[in-house]
Length: 118
Image (cartoon, rainbow, N blue to C red; front, side, top):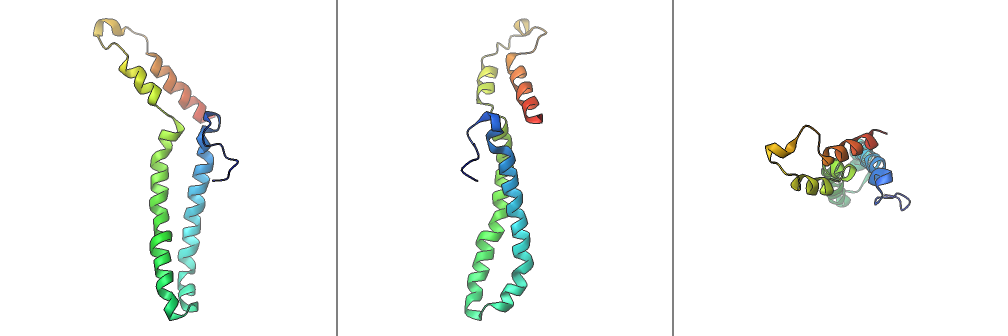
């Protein structure tokens, strides 16, 4: 990720768009690498073929796993919930005290979801 991308700011959604672009760019490059592999195998000397196999096994095939990890983490990055969890634990869950209004943590989650939609 470029140094100009702010991964620490809620205003930029912690670089959410840039993270997605990075993941999809890597996926595209993996497709290109797979497409050129047969031609590459024909061009390299036999003694170098093992290096090519290791490159594909380690790096090219690892990108899919990296992409999966990134997308599984995106909800946590896009909508941090540590303060919401704290607010939920502080709610008095006595039926007599619950009332008919929503709790403050519901408002927080709704505001964060609306911010993501912008």
